[in-house]
Image 1 (cartoon, helix red, strand yellow):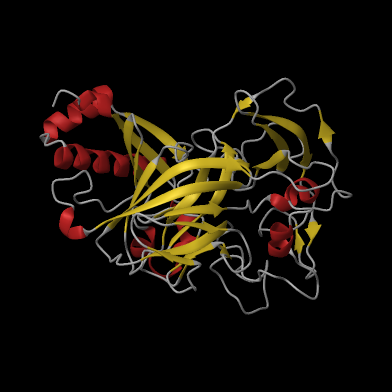
Image 2 (image 1 turned 180 degrees about the horizontal axis):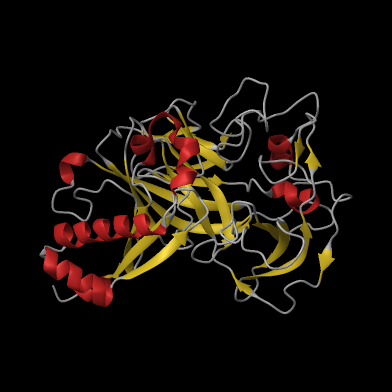
Length: 413
């Protein structure tokens, strides 16, 4: 076993997409461990707190009228004219990687163990050592067309500070209503529609004393983590799918094990979208988006050795903790295959909790019948009396429902 470190830099990150064709940032073997740094793509919501003084973050977010370090942001067009910018924001998350695993082949399963997660402190002279994040009630949020106060519609950014002393928690510092921002290329963003646009705080009004005396329990986790799909060379980071991605489950943190079916040679693992806290559904559009560093261990399970294990027949992401197994249902288990050439943009028109629930039910039924040798009638009875289904997220176009079953139920078997 070797232990590597993968810091954030323009050479180790890609913005807004999973890909099987980009240059790997690191190549490892099964059993190796990697310390991986991640950055939130929302850091420019408050440059002073989340970017200033951090040389790596400054380089990644650098964008002037003459130079843009990370030009492509999304899986969309890279040749103009643009509506929003290169990549067109068809995918928004800053991802570290890809990490290639030697000998990984389609049909294998890659297990990622999250050994530790810790926040990335501010390097600003004014806020040095403190940790901050941004939550956005956004235009893609479930609430957006159901507002009752004026002005409406509106997008609201709330900046939080993370306190890691004692019981870790986050407290709101201030918020502001998004006002149109002009990027260095002269494109006006009337809504939050392209990642990494620096907010000019002279144009927004800070509202302090928001969420007064409210403490949000910290749940450090990675919202977007997974492998490259096989269907396209560049795949938006927004909708989750069979190879993982933007699942947005707060349980994918320290102590968790995630299993992903390998779709391409080398697996091409990437991770990002780090969160300080999130509730089930991520209703407003984002979690508390912050920057985190994680310690990961990679275990490759070869297809020839899966029979008789919990991974037999696994063709979707699965979570294991000390207490639970969880499967993830989506509106479309593989939206890329189901919806054709324009799948990455058309999936948003098909979002459905009903379909995601149906998919989660089918996946958990298969798990109980295959792994625990239950009949279909036994599996359905057990799901009804002992499984927990929850809405993972309703903001990522391919909406998600997780189905969980406690390990303790099977201790006597």
